[in-house]
Amino acid sequence: MKNIFAKWNSLSLVFRIICGIIVGVVLALVAPSWSWLSILGTLFIGALKSVAPVLVFVLVTAAIAGHRSGNQTNMKTVIILYAVATIAAGATAVIAAKLFPTKLHLKDSAEDISPPSGIGEVLQNILTGITSNPIEALGNANYLAILAWAIALGVALRMASDTTKTLISNLSDAVSKVVQWVINLAPFGIIGIVYDAIVTNGLGALKEYGHLIIVLVGTMLFVALVVNPLIVFLFARRNPYPLVLTSLRESGITAFFTRSSAANIPVNMKLAEKLGLDKDTYAVSIPLGATVNMGGAAVTISVLSLATAHTLGIDIDIPTAILLMLVAAVSAAGASGVAGGSLLLIPLACSLFGVPGDVAAQVIAIGMIIGVVQDSCETALNSSTDIVFTATAEYAKERKTTK
Image (cartoon, rainbow, N blue to C red):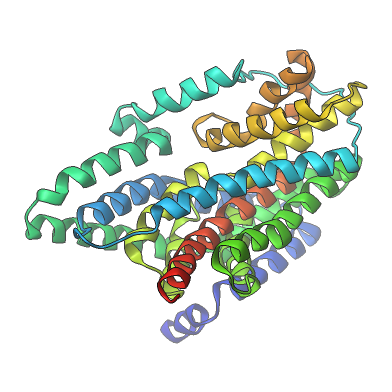
């Protein structure tokens, strides 16, 4: 039995995930009454989401506390890349939505939805979220507050003794190890996730919104395979595709199924180590990216908002489209601090066109229906680009130093 486990663990995670997908599809088709299989996915995602807040807090605290004066990081460049990429994703989505207009069937309603009323409320949510109680932040997975407290505590602990720093570092390694154990269970969790998705929704539930899904997924693929590589090339002046494709394969696939950028942090950390990146940078940039690097969310907000406008016969001029692009970028950065993610920010963007709140709420309902595809692709794009731009910042620094 021990040899079997060793052989299984020696296989690549991607291969094991593919096996999980195949098994999940087969079981959903031949045994749709085995509803107990769904608990595998529930337990896996629950375990990841439970440990992810603690992981972010410990990793960032340990990285900052252990940082030695004089060690240069690439955080400034990483933050610039995150901002540029999110705005570029929003702009690409606006263009795609204008080129391939989508009409929605506004017939469903979304109950118990409390979207923000304006950009001011989004910014207020971000600021109030940062100042939340740290214990509550960990319990509620409020990553803005977790990051803020981890940074503050890390800075305070930089003056601590080496023994204390060693303890924090060991704690960080221990939590990371626990997460690795959970990640190794991904294939079994994915069996449950795929099984539940097919049995519950089927493929027929997505046919009605096929055009919308194609526009959303197509735009995200264009951002991942064209826009982001162009940004990488402009900053690093090297062939971007080995990095981009590696990130999509080793980070994007797991993020697609976990549907949580925060839960995918351990995968990105391991990939960053594999790529030989600077730990002082990626220990902070990866958790930060899981919170604010939201190109996929910018795509979702822009495409669904313009689809709503097209459905209602509202003509969007260029200045309004530019404003939508900026609102989508800012809103996307705060999406993780708003319950429901990017979908709840659609009414805010729709308000730019004078769309009533009840109509925008119906769009949220549509987003929930296609969420099995939309949210998975959005998370895959968001999470994989965290590692892409962390590496790009380091490559850009190396290019400058070798001139």
